[in-house]
Amino acid sequence: MFPEITATELGDKLKSDEKFILLDVRELSELEHAKVTDSRLQVTPVSRLASEGIAALSESVQSQEIPVYVMCHLGSRSMQVTGWLIQQGYKNVINVSGGIDAYARKVDSSIGFY
Image 1 (spheres, rainbow, N blue to C red):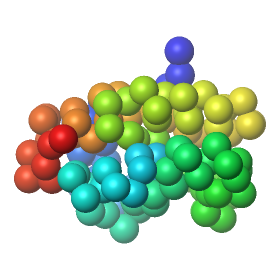
Image 2: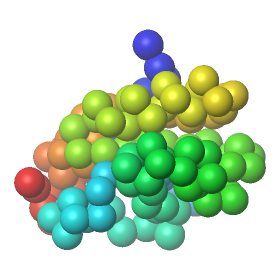
Image 3: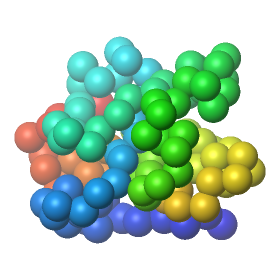
Image 4: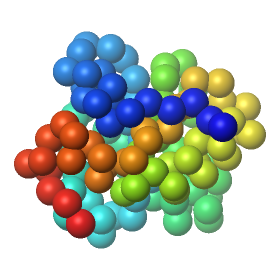
């Protein structure tokens, strides 16, 4: 298994000043339905990762200096990306279990569901 945090743990981290990147790997059309608003959010869809590889990621993610929490809709795509990043040598990458759906249900329902 890969390292994971719960949606509730992510909610606590988003309330903190902790430095990390929240990497949302959903497709751009999905962001219209539900989206976390935070300066640490970066969006890189799985389709872009599939076509461009590591080059699709921002320099801050590529630098591997701070933790990267990976999120999708329900947690399966983010788990695949987490595993892929670990295979690429990333050490501090963590899947958000249950994705934005769990976050909306357990932390902030105002962001929406789909």
